[in-house]
Length: 142
Image (cartoon, rainbow, N blue to C red; front, side, top):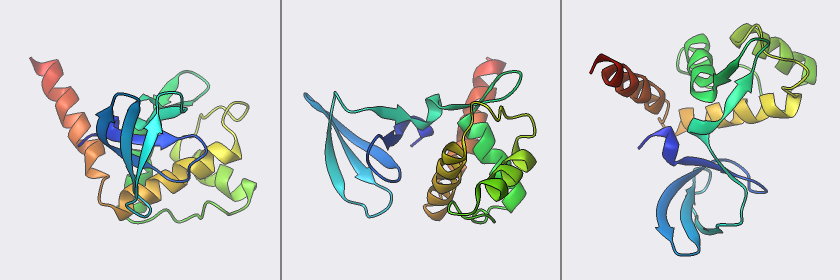
C-alpha cells in the first residue's frame, strides 16, 4: 500500500485507507477504529499523496514533511501534541519546515499534519514514505 491509498475525508476524523471501489463511490477503513464506511462520490476526499504544504518558494509534498518529522522524532510519536498552543505548534513546524508560509499554513493545518503523522506512526505506515522514494528513484534511473 502507498500514500495514494490513504485518505482524508472532510467531516470525518483521522485517516482512512481505501479498501474497494463501488459504483457510487468507495469503501474506506478508519485507521482510528478499523470501522469500514461507504463514501459517496460527492464527498470531499483528499489523497495524502496529493497534499502539499505551502512554503515561501514552492509547495512541499506532505510525504516530505512527514519524513522530516519522522527524522526529527527518530521514528517516535511527535513531541508536540495537536492540542498544544498555536505558538508551540508554529515553533515546532518552523523546526521541520523553516520557510513554510505563515499566511497560508494555519495552526489547524499544523494540527492535522501532526495528527496524521502520529496515526501513520502508530500503524507502522511511515515506511510507505520510504517505499515511495525508492519507487521514484528507480523510475528516474530507467
